[in-house]
Image (cartoon, rainbow over all chains, first blue to last red; front, side):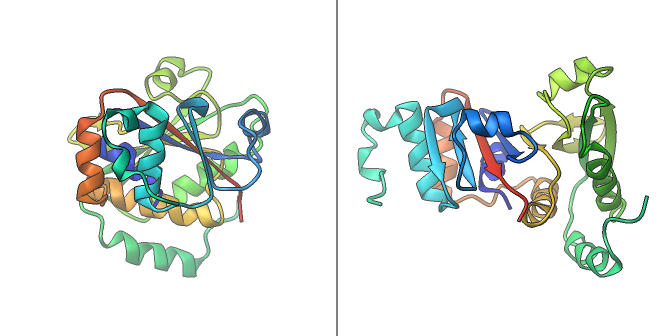
Length: 79
Length: 147
């Protein structure tokens, strides 16, 4: 199962695309994709390289949308 | 064209599809303009969706079915969305694939079909609670390579 796709199913505000980097090299280059999987959040507001656990991706999304400032800093993982 | 999935894989996938609950519709968009992987991606989706009565496949052309492509936010080919089908209503969750899901991504495809069929993300309560508070759109683009 794809974590990003799980999130898309969960929230109507979330959309998730799986992109085959070798078929779309110009897109992969634009986001400087080298290691995969590489998750781009909101067109570059955040980047996550590698397969990460659910809580980690959530924390990265929060950071990318600036939700951390809203008193949720304690939930950010220490890794 | 020769079958892409051998008998053994078809049997394995059928076993997984025994867990399907509700109808799922895959909306696939091909292009006649330099899309090397379109024929194989379409064939793969045809073979996979044929393995269960709960799975349907609609095939569109990116150029001639522009309005539909726009509605499902498919801007390149091969591209497809995995949607729920409730009666005659297609429910688009924003689950999209661009490129052929081969290798490891084939497993992702099968699991995604099962997830959409269950209508359940399987995420933790904590994550579900966070998404309830979400007030702005989030677009996740996951780049992969066939391995």
